[in-house]
Length: 465
Ligand code: 6PG
Image (cartoon, rainbow, N blue to C red; front, side, top):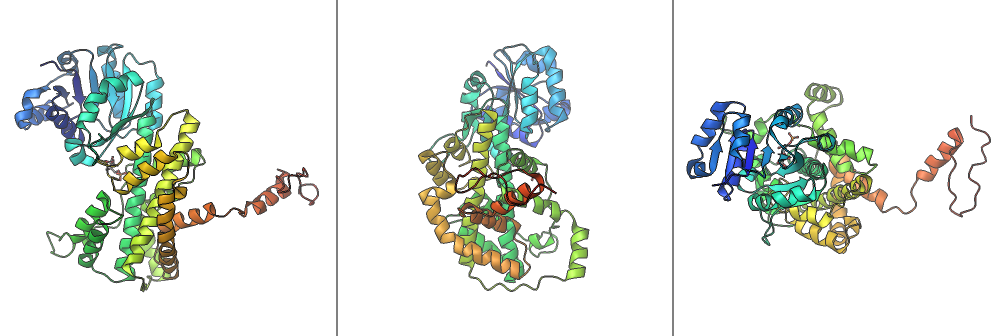
């Protein structure tokens, strides 16, 4: 057998990806910094071991691969990628291709791509956790057209498939475009998770529902418009028993969320792009607040615990979630439209929605409808697509009731309320920034436009203070 593909880094994700590649019929050579890990991986590969060549040195890895070589890096994002690329540099030539499949910051991918590399380079975002990597992730590729053409058969073979059979792997654009889209995916992932945790909080603290009664609610929602992997696993998380104490495991889990940073990057980049993504920002903020447990305890000691009583029907929570989800995705796609313009990428919005339909953490049935709405008009904000405008007509009254009740009962709903606030700005033709422009002109003589088009560009307040 001729091996054209190599993989470096046999951690959880790398090992799963290597097995997936071998299973789809592509012989692969693998290398890990610790040789024992490589050998154990090969020994545990079962029938697939025949298609896998374990190697003990980087040189041996390169020699085991027949040109044109493609070497996939599955090492921790950051310095490890630079180190690995530096180690490969003397061993590879201009026909060889190195693929960073980790969760790189897209600015790092751009930087690496812009450096004078002795080999070709591409960055791909891979989503779906270990299970996805093993049996079908969603793949967002960035790099030159020729590199994509070379890797497309393999990447589409190992990727998840949407219900209509389309592989969830596509070319997003050059250089960092793949990792950029993966970061937005993760920002939305944070937002979806946060909104679910907010309605969980309404049920737990506002309605005094035990975890055992919350699980079936998520299960029910998973059969409707909210059908998604994250709702599905939330039901399972709520239903699971603590193997030690026997009670709900959810009640035993510390309420401080970790993060590796990809969601935060999305919020940071959104600010650079002046793209409003308040639901994602709220989700990042809430994770940051969650980590400050002592401060929250002090806050509760001083101001008291919320004695919440929410009497809304559970249907309201479902409708609020539907509306919140649409608002969040509308922001995410608009951010990518802004990025495409800023970076000169031809990001294909319906193609992105299609790639996200299966394999990735944010997979959901709603992404089918989003792909369709974006195909009708990729530049139009999703909230204006007739299908989603209709869902919003239905969901917004419930979102208002949930957010208003949360505010009155001191139940924190940062992501849902941020979505609502953005929506109300977006439907206000005559906003309030005329006051801001007046103030700016008053203290800084910044000038303003007049509604009547006349060109008195300053107010009657005399010279600036
Ligand atoms: C995915 C996930 C994954 C991510 C973490 C979550 O798409 O498979 O987004 O790539 O690394 O599982 O990241 P945090 O640690 O930031 O929550």
